[in-house]
Image 1: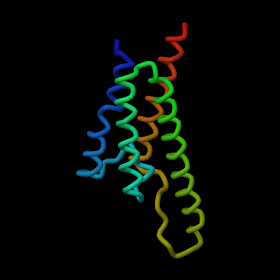
Image 2: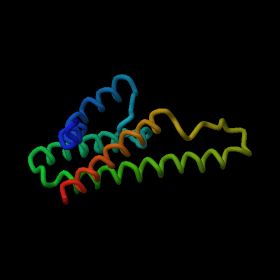
Image 3: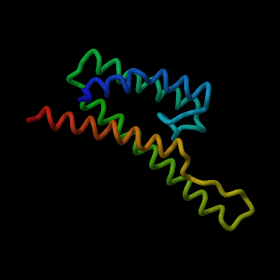
Length: 129
């Protein structure tokens, strides 16, 4: 059986590995909603790693930090996809090139973030009983 608490912790502590994959290979499945904002993306990576350190030092805060980060991640990802979608609709009648608002990395980001958000919620629920 997989220890969900350790898996969630390592997900955040491995944020520098996600950053390196993004930096070297443009494989940004962790923070795909900030592709056009490099400074904000780096800050978000630092924020996620800081959450991992906080979870490591204070395991009792795991639930609240995981819920906050997971919720913010899903919200920002959804907004970025919706803005791209609205931009696509605006460009339908123009001569501008129309791009797909859903990329593989944004879908993977949804799956990864959603999975860890649900795991955090399930872990908290099982600890309540």
